Amino acid sequence: MALSSSLFELLVAIVQLYEAYKRPVTSSEIAERLNKSDGTVRNSVAALKALGLVEARTGPNGGYVPTVKGLECVRSPQALERLWEPLQLVVDDAPSGVYAVELDLVGLTDPTGVKAILRIAGSLHNLREGVRVRVGPTSWSRILVTGRVRSVDYRRREVLVSVDSLVAVPRITASEVMTPSPIVAREDDELRAVAEVLLAKGIRALPVVNSEGRLCGIVTASNVAEAYLARDFNAKVRDYMERSVPTIRPDADILDIMRILASKKTGRAVVVDENARPKGIVTRTDVLNKLARLTSPEPGS
Image 1 (cartoon, rainbow, N blue to C red):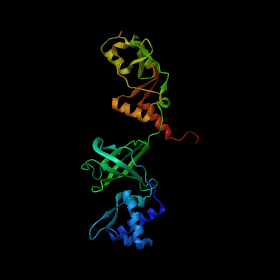
Image 2 (image 1 turned 90 degrees about the horizontal axis):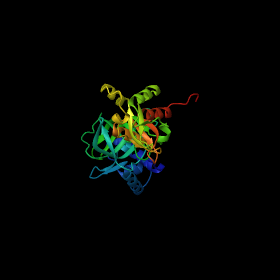
Image 3 (image 1 turned 60 degrees about the vertical axis):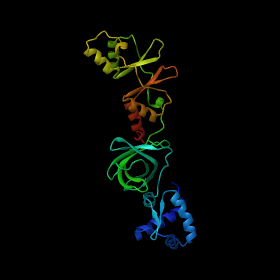
Image 4 (image 1 turned 90 degrees about the vertical axis):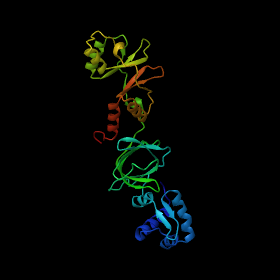
């Protein structure tokens, strides 16, 4: 969130006066602090209200009050993005009916820690101090935020979160992560031969292709074990292979790959071309190793 110097100066004045007086502050008090006219202050405060940094209280004791976001922006004047679409919150490791419609990060260089301010849609009933929440990845900057609720402003529907983990998912495609040119099995291969390949290569699965070389399934070490336990020593691949296998294209984004692996509850997906011919395999381990390399310094650096 970018604020002009004049608006930031105004916000700082409101926060300082509010913290000093412990009550809403009037435009005349702000004007006196900044040596500006009352009308100028009123016009400028309208912009802060539109940004959700300040709110107006009416009545005899009315005035201006900084919001949670406004307070945090002054204490740690850094903030991040407005969401393009609502994101479901995961609360205490369980999906919830609560959505973040706006996300701001503050204190990115603050030694006391990063904080997130979430504008919430949905019930705030389960959002209380100490609850663990996760939101993201965001659609544009692909940020995933995890932390614990620090405070809840029920009236403004804002939640302040102390961030434990802040991860930006890189823009990487399947072709950059996959193991290319995979060894394949055919439907009429003996399962015994597949077992030998898996053991020799130290891998756990092979794509299965038909007579035209198109993907038709996958055979895993678990399938081999199943045949062995059934004492079916002469079994063919087609007898035990899994015919439903997640597939992705070489240009698939790593974020989509992670979602597919999670939704299908599987550890691997086969990368295929436009003719359904296997071009590679991506495993959950491949994804994690790639992310780990991105966050580790290169040797000699």
